[in-house]
Image (cartoon, rainbow, N blue to C red):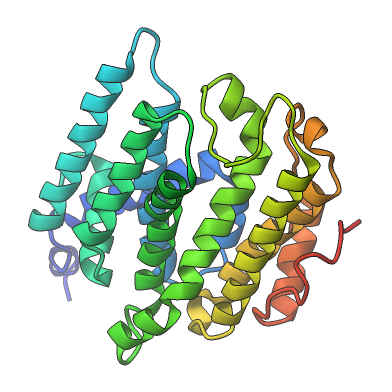
Length: 304
């Protein structure tokens, strides 16, 4: 076979697809060390699909939370509407001139993600521009759109190549939603001082950032532990290509929740609780050794 015939095996658009995937990976690696660590343990093509999903989520989040100088709420509404419109068009056509949207749409069409999941996501992003204090109803709606549907998008990627993919998706959806909810609630607790101060938002019902109640703090920690426990049962049923990576993410957030439990609410409002890099590495190594079996107890205390 001549050199020319070998080159002709690749369609002209393949390079653009590759650059789009690389752009999505760059977004994730630049913004999330924990997710970057876990995603590297995913098998391909699942790894690329999940990175492409998270990159779109990250871009939308940046529109809402990191406005450019002089960019007001109305401007961010327009930018978010434009991003959703581009996403919907790309879901229909399979391509976009926006690299991150292009990467997302290619993966979404491949694994079965559609507007039934993207519409609630963008709806929750808009809530961040209009709603400052949540009640139980609006918080449940927000968590579903901002976190649970992201877990469901990833689940679509996990089971896409499984026999009976739709049935497997239905069987595992509850655990995926609870894991996404746990991630979001942990981040609420880690950031509740910043959210209420810099961004003027109060997500956690019953938790006053100016005088945080130990009872309310513990209630949220216990709720997260319950979410993580439900998710753990689902992780054991995931395909091998995703089980260890999801286990690592689960255990990292279990560790964060344990550290939050060991931190008074008043202190957590001033100092963001983190997991040291060495501990993250140990958690990942342990998950690999356990072959993706999640940590038995999510409240076993802070690791050394």
